[in-house]
Amino acid sequence: MPSTPSLQTAAEIPTERLPTFADIEAAAGRLAGHAVVTPLLTNAELDRETGARVLIKPEMLQRTCSFKFRGAYNKISRLAVGPERPRAVVAYSSGNHAQGVAAAAALAGIPAVIVMPSDAPAIKVSNTKGYGAEVILYDRRTEQREEIAARIAAERSAAIIPPYEDPDVIAGQGTAAREIVLQAREIGAVPDLLVAPCSGGGLLAGTALAMETLSPNTRIYSAEPEGFDDMRRSLAAGRRVENEAVSGSFCDALLARRPGEITFEINRKRLAGGVAVTDAEVAAAMEYAFRVLKLVTEPGGAVGLAALLTGKLDARGRTVAVLCSGGNVDAGTFCKAVGGGTS
Image (cartoon, rainbow, N blue to C red; front, side, top):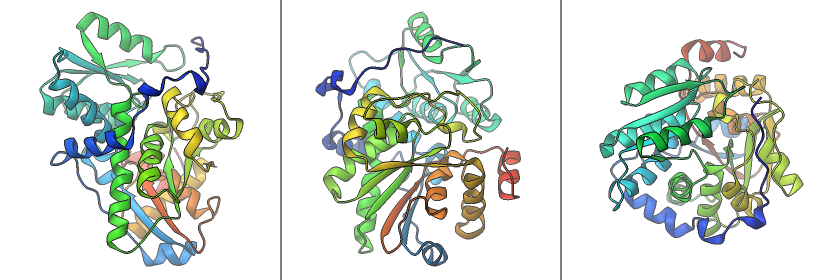
């Protein structure tokens, strides 16, 4: 087992490293014409079942089928026009950030190398290669992906594109929440609650910054797989805590060991709490999304919907925005989930 790095307290994070709402606005400008403005969906049956007014943000309809393209493109597009344009970019990811970086790098004309776990879903590995990236596999139980990426970056004069621990990446992810608020206004809605999936916390950090300015009364919750709910437990403890396991949930996109330093500094001040759901509850949410909403969602993308459908996030009588983060799922895993089981 690789050694665990010490956990830095939030008080040690320099303020200048933290993104702002202005960075999200700038990211929205860069993404215009490149990222999809995904719709905000409503469904009468879902509203009746939950007793809430539910607003679904389907980021599986985003370029590369997840929100990750937003942060990757924002980061890489800035590097591409800078004075020190890198010879290549390197990223580490279980799959969605991998695809986002690969696609964004291709648009910028920069080679990409992606470090992925050997147990990553085949569709995510295949798609990443399909966007033109070189994929290097590692064993998540015995190797540190950050160390591998750092070595590659040094050897190839490449810039590292972190999956969440980066101001530009966080700002890019925040554009999804910005769209939620603006789209909700168009239908006369203001979210009382917002729930989004969480791994390292970049999506939630960008979401929290966007909502703080655009909808400050909205209460924001993380959704995570049971046993991998490090953000929920970290918020309760007031400091970053780790998961004991590195694998064991079929929510492959949400298995970060601990919240990021920058992301936790943002989230600890702005999130109302977190919700943990079981794999069985996630599978049920995937089946519901397919049957009722006509959406294909990967396990990690369905955890927020699972939190709502189980009642663990009580939204009765309220307006709740649910961010479904992605839809990159192997056919076998999806069919087993919607057929009444998990992978």
